[in-house]
Length: 161
Image 1 (spheres, rainbow, N blue to C red):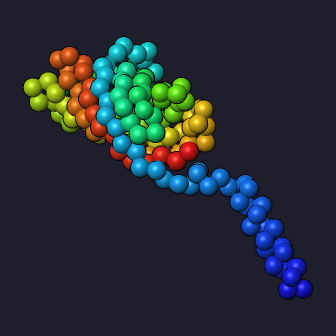
Image 2 (cartoon, rainbow, N blue to C red; image 1 turned 180 degrees about the horizontal axis):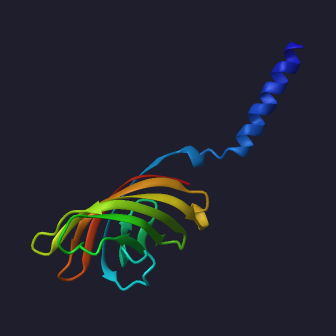
């Protein structure tokens, strides 16, 4: 009887180990830097909001050199007031062609001399290649120069894959 309970327990442990990937639970530190520009975007945020597009590139852990494109919703007063950032969606392509798809929410400060700071939290919602089963949360902080539409930023957080 004792041997059967131990055998059943061992069989369950082996079965669970085969189903739950070890790397999916490992939160690996993530950091990087990016630059980019605001770009035109198809309006998708509804009549009371503005859709902003952006293209970025940079270097980050786990990605190497990367590029990214995306959009987010914000308020029409972004050039003069602090505003919320919501319903953002970004696709980032790593050096090896693998991708991460992220949703984002955040805020932007009121611009001073045409430059505003921003912060947003990006959550991994999908991926391809080596990021097919990825999860993670990334925090981006940086500036937007409304005179040139230049974007700069740093990113930190965690990624598992």
